[in-house]
Image 1 (tube, rainbow, N blue to C red):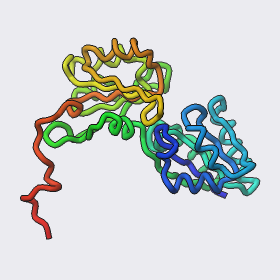
Image 2 (image 1 turned 90 degrees about the horizontal axis):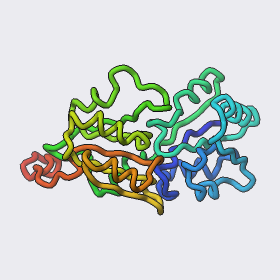
Image 3 (image 1 turned 135 degrees about the horizontal axis):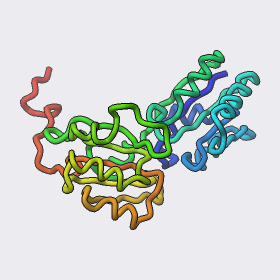
Length: 247
């Protein structure tokens, strides 16, 4: 058997990859991340499949489910929201499975920041404006950030910054980024990107915190900070330039 760590996408059920959907359709056991994974996806599981909501489970309990399926010779679809490579807690599960010699495979998914950019109708790498994206979060009640990865240090580059799991600390986020980006720097907050109840807020570092509080957004949101959000006067990329040598 194999454990398939599947990126379920940012929220809309039809944003799962074809590979992910096929693995889901053929796995008799499915562990899914509670309210973060669309319920419609579970309808794609085989009839009679064991469905386990991991929202209230510990790591040990999750691994026990994976090992039990392995011993029973059953494939497992382990659904994670977004893409498993970013803030998914997949690493510690894979480490446990490695130690237990349980085979697994990773199926990438559409990350939340990509869905947020699509909702905003913006490219996050604009020629002459921004070519670097920093994906990060804040500590708060979560796992502490490593030394040198605080927002003040990361913001010194002026690169486009995308923050996950940080909207509850929007006031602190703004305070830490203001010195590097300035009060007029464009900011967008996208809550529940790609879902029917998606919410988009656009503003600047000077006013975005007030908008977030007024809208009552406290979770499942991505914060995007950077000049690329309002860029209109920029050079065309070299990719399609008539001056580019083509064979």
